Amino acid sequence: MIVIKCPSCHEDRHEEELEYGGEADVVRPTPPDGASDETWTDYLFMRTNTKGVHYEQWCCRAGCGQWFKVARHTVSHEVAEVIRYEDRFAYQKEGGE
Ligand SMILES: [Zn+2]
Image (tube, rainbow, N blue to C red):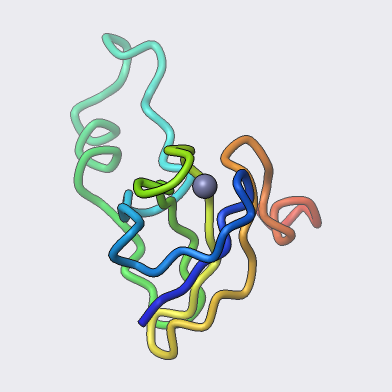
């Protein structure tokens, strides 16, 4: 059972109340007509599939409806960090991106 505290409404939400939105910070190529086929393929299909801490996006579907980002361990489901959608993970602030 995954329980995540929404950073917008500050309520604990069980995974049934949330919507998983895949990997966080996957950026659409811009300008779209200038991107190569390889760039589009990477954007549409290639994900990290991490065993360990994975950076993903979730929606507070049963609550406030806001999207937010979560650092979650894919084996233990331990939630290491929850941030608002427009914020950056701690590793990104440290220049690790
Ligand atoms: Zn919420």
